[in-house]
Image (cartoon, rainbow, N blue to C red):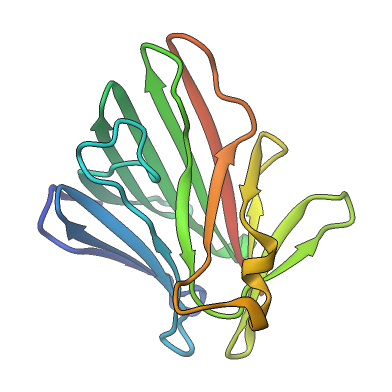
Length: 199
């Protein structure tokens, strides 16, 4: 089953115990956010640019659609344009992995100045490091721990560690930029991605 949303119509993928992914129309594109199932707390909220920015803070999704697969996966797809870039994104709920898998791509005729997916970090996010030396962020909410992890070493998490220290936090939520480790030069497609793991 496929359901398409083309602006001004909110969309949602309810992951049950794995939380809710919500898309809301704002200006000329969708914003998206994740909410904890148990507490209803908003954990992540996308940071969006306006139409005048050619290389926006997050992929500009002007159209989103949902698709259900026979193997149990539920996927939200997003596409959009800004400047000379064509963006695509997929948000896949994989219950067996207790994860949302987010894959991003930008196709351009020339080298981008920057590429990222940017979020406001809402809640008590902390920096952690895996046993292979890869950094990730973790947040305890209700009885669950939510982690943001790069899908591979081709993706990096860019943030100010001091902004995560409770004593240093102000009224403005800290931001996380999820970026490709390297941007393809010339006419090419750059891909990157991350995992939101709930455990």
